[in-house]
Length: 197
Image 1 (cartoon, helix red, strand yellow):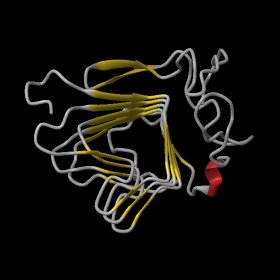
Image 2 (cartoon, rainbow, N blue to C red):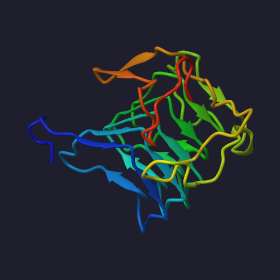
Image 3 (cartoon, rainbow, N blue to C red):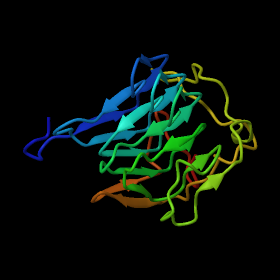
């Protein structure tokens, strides 16, 4: 509960896979009176499911950066992410297969996202997002042990995700200055110099 405006929930370097919800938010449900801001970075959401909306993530306020959403599903709306009326969502440097439902949320896009379609982007995007046209065209590998403590999804050779973010690149999301090419990735591996994935 963030009734006094001092709390937030931070998720980083994590993998959510195979989670199910009978309602909304297959992996994360972040909505309700006094919901604290959710800050997600360098994390993977794969094969999560909800019967209603937000196969991976539902609600806000949420800031999501440097994360991969692959193969999530919802029966009704927002297979990847689903907003909630009046609760803002900020995205930058993410990979999305599937679609997002803004759900009346203010949706802010600081760029460098890649998606199977443009539904997870926003009209105010700075022109650095890539709409690959399909999940197949994103050329992502399966969820696998690619080193490090958690399973991840790696882009395959030729993927439009590779090198999408110039280094250095920093964006402002809800007053938070976020570097999009961190020194280490979700696996804990040192990032190579130059444009990052």
